Image (tube, one colour):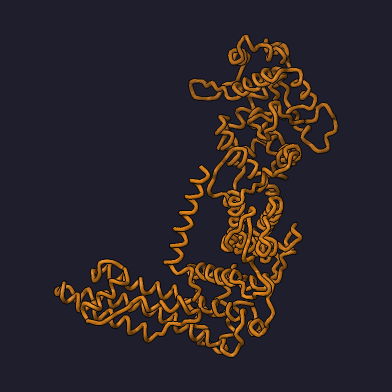
Length: 613
């Protein structure tokens, strides 16, 4: 099975490498892919209008050969980019290629479809001219933009700016920049926020720290359209998203190229699990590292934020993961993720323009955790269950679910908790609430974590495990039992219902409840009346309203301070995610905006407990 899995992975890797190769992703020249794309777009237009049978470039060559009797090599339009890193296509050559193709197309159309040839040719020529125009505009803008760098020394820094300028040249706003006075200053404002730092950046020879390079991406992350408006430049939302990806990839490619041979950014020969891996397999680490840094830098409004300054993590995570290629400890990821979610909680309401990039960063962190098998809930430490059991958000989850399922009543002695026992200041030992797990470690109230009086925990120790399980399961049946009148109204549970559900063989349980089962114990009758009241309440009100109206102390301590506040949002969601196996593909969306009242209600309903949803 393992060998078969390795074969499948190897096959997928080969397919992916082939795709990258035919798409030009393994070619470093920045003009190669755009030029290749134009060639295939032109051939696709010819195919759609019936001039050639397929969009293979050899079909275009044959078209010219058959109708103009010329040797034509359409692929040569971009082939030089394979060998020459600094190759820049010649616009006249492109124009000549297009004229030749259109001339041959016209001759074929007149031959095979003389009646419709003029109409089809007009459509074809218009579409191809538009493709050519967009490409030539990009080419002209790129050449003019690169001309701005001619007075600066050739260096790794200049290579990076060179690539960024080519990416900028794809967009209409760059033509506006080139028409302005001092266009390099405007580019500097886009990259650095000021008009002079770009010149300083280009003339310096030292290797910049990674955070200095990533700071070039910061201006393209939040509220870009407003920034462009202030510069009197125009960019659409779609263009903004595309531009973000372009600049991100420019910086990523430059860093992974290790332009400073004597001082690497990324380990050229990384090892994972005692096996050598390819440098490109560190891409997930890079994307995660950038996501963490970016979110912290935006939050602190600090472009020069050091990786060693990230909240809760002292060493440079960039150096650790990318240069040394060490594995990231799970608890380090958890600490960093906590910091990211804290930032989101602090900033999302005050700075809504930041939430889009924040969500993207958190999604990247969650994606990395899935890839590396990390979890908020299941760290590798033997005492973690004990530690986690006493965390306030776990207590909150257990208590709230218990109050919704069993309404604070103990299944063995039918006593109801008092609301004041949930106060942190409540000191009366035997009456204070406690939680225990009669069937072993679970953390889940559905498994069962029971909330009862502290003194009652001892009662369970006097029973066998099967007796405990029977008592709990029968009480659950009692809570789920419903009977209605002719109008569909819920009727109260009475002593006959209890005796029928438990049966004579389990009468030992309800006999512990006092003589009230036979109508003469006010304490039993009072608890039963409260139970019937709460059963109706939870069907008529939302979970948080039910808690607020009937368990005010528990509501304030656990619901308001631990859940509604969002203080433990991520921990709590991951706890439920692991316990219930939610398997939600939109994990990030849930972490950031989950309605816990709705989630708890759905969970209770899934387990059979009637609540208002």
